Image 1 (cartoon, rainbow, N blue to C red):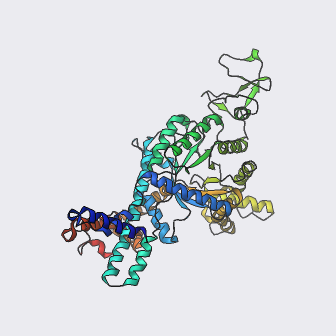
Image 2 (cartoon, rainbow, N blue to C red):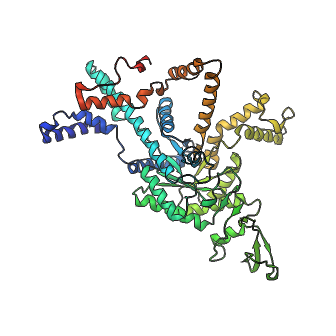
Image 3 (cartoon, rainbow, N blue to C red):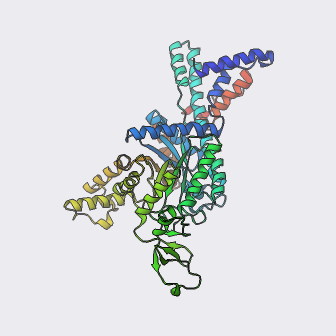
Length: 530
């Protein structure tokens, strides 16, 4: 028997025990409300989605074509619509997640107004967005099930038992819109204790996967900007352990930690690492510093020096007080970071790169997997990359290396629309199309995400609407550019009253007041035009 039928029976028994005061309580209505509220708390969600993600990681280990994907969100409605669209187009949410971008929280969710991605926004804004996303995803479940319940009632009224049984099966096997969210906790917004406290809040809101980076919390920069400052491994590993303790304290034993290294593009550090013995993590971290050998007599007032292999060395220190790494060590430092992060309990890795190049990503992961063969990567398919230009240039370089004639192309001007219909452009687009599958296979990328897609799609769509509506097209700019497309593409939001919960409210009114219910969805509701 289904959980739905079990709930009907259980509530019927409770009603019988309660006697006449419960006569107006319909057990099936309660069963419907329970089905529409499958997840009672954020921790229920975090435990469920952690298990989903772990199962996906295991499936990926067995088959590299089963990588996962997500798109970044800045509002619950955006996340909801993504999952509704995924179910509509693909029939399942399998291996499709949501990403919560710290960049978008800073730019779009702060009480200070738009901010750069430098951890200046309110800490609580991140957990609030996790909670908001899951509120909207749970509402998507309730709305979809509400539609099935109404279809079930119609089938019963028509005496169509076969149709009723078919709909009941859909209810019993309903696939939730609730999926894993990989949530960005930046550099922890403070020390390890601050990281732990913030992590708890995010997990309690429903996050099963937390992504943290190895930058200095108070100097944090966007991964695609200059001026990034990393921390010694001991500091970063303390925060990784803080995340694990937060998961374990809250009973989310399968919680996923994503450790991000910004070392490929970070040339600075704020401190010299503590060295307890030669060859330890601190010693290796310091070995990448740009230093010069000096004599004690050459030391200036305030100089910082340390012993390296019996020699006194002075690290190059900038006027800001920061220390500089040697040029060309980014690849090595990323590999070192990744190996250390896994040793400290990270489940997945994230390497920020300067450009999206399959062989560079694979090269770093090959070195990591010499030590940790099952190491898996989360990769940021970032809008900060000029994908068109990068892949046209990669194709140009590959063709030139092969001896192919590229004289028809100006490498420095390949973004030009004049090349859009060219053979080179087609070849570059083919590389972009298979980029995710290629890096999943060659670099063990388990999860591909785009951090800021809806930031850009919102700006693009609003620009197009404004141009038409405030221009010569007038109202036709909206009707032709938006509503007509919504209707013909089956976009659920064309019935915006339904999407906002009006029909569910009518259902509840009927549960509570029976025939006396004053419902909004009657004949005069203009949504009936759709």
